[in-house]
Length: 214
Picture 1: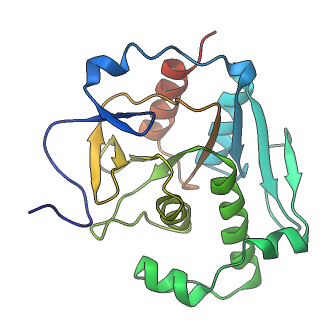
Picture 2 (picture 1 turned 180 degrees about the vertical axis):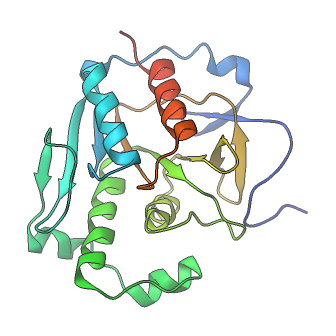
């Protein structure tokens, strides 16, 4: 019986353009022209700033959603959200806490963080996250809302789990390990933990090198 949540074990699979495929087929997908691509992120310390650094290195346009009081390490492509724009992505903390099986802070700044993450996910056609997949199938920390929102929006979703040292993709029911995935959409979202480890940094470097032509 298939598990509804959690991480599946077994052979690595790959998801290209939303479809299950053999790994050797994925190698034939052409690399993207970075000048035609846009990264949607938040510029925060850790995974987001590394996504931004790599985007700048490859000549990819950046859109870093921010708001008053938000600390960003990226000065490139800052998109300051107004109070009205933030409220468009408002979500009940009771709903989020129930969905994520954990309690979230009711502090106004945290609510704004969740709202800005929703802007990131809503803007990208493919969602890439660095973090940790928990036993219940959610992703650890505030980043977890980005993953859950991507599931709700039925968008291609990938997570590099720093503890398991590997990439995983969500198939609608569970997480599956995936070897050497590549970005396949010109508009993509990159977010994740503030505590980026060396294996996470290397995973992002490999992801960009596989995805974009130079």
